[in-house]
Structures are given as C-alpha cells and as structure tokens.
Amino acid sequence: MRTINFTEFRNNASMYLTKVENGETIRIIRHGKTIAEITPGGDNVDKLPAWKKKGLRLSVKGKHLSSAILSERKMD
Image 1 (cartoon, helix red, strand yellow):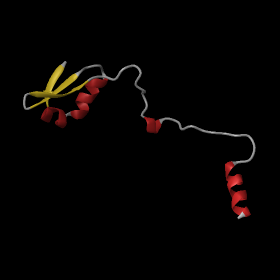
Image 2 (image 1 turned 90 degrees about the vertical axis):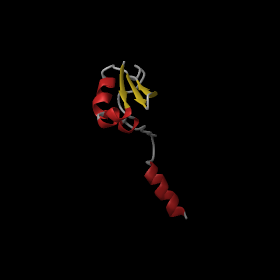
Image 3 (image 1 turned 135 degrees about the horizontal axis):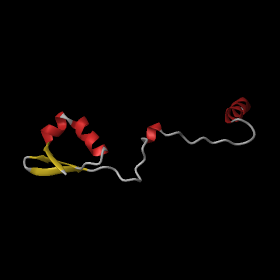
Image 4 (image 1 turned 180 degrees about the vertical axis):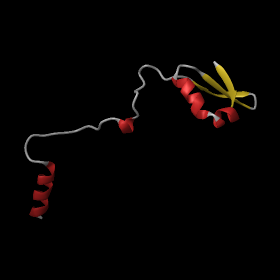
C-alpha cells in the first residue's frame, strides 16, 4: 500500500488512479491523519459506466405507440 499526502494526490490524481486500476491500494493523508483509502473495485464492478450501457428497448406487436397517441389526439 502506498501512502501519499492530499496535495500529492490532487496534483497527480490521474497517475494514482491508474495505479489503483492496476491493482494498487492508495492511502491519502492530510495533516498526518488518514482521510481516504482508494482500493481497486471488485470483480462484480461493471466495466462500463451506466450512461454508456445500452438502454432497455420495449417492443409490443401491433400498433406503434406513436400511432396510438396520434389516434387518441384525433378523438379529442
């Protein structure tokens, strides 16, 4: 485990996060006290962030939803 101070982490965060991705654990201290420990994610952590995953697609046989909405609008 590597121990660094907060200023060092702030100035080189990208480098340290890459080290965490590669399996290293980083302990961050400020004023001599541990404030955080950054560890690699477990195997159950998804590789893609939620906003990059494919969305849910619903499909129903029959009319398209847009057709149903337009027909409802014409009734009023």
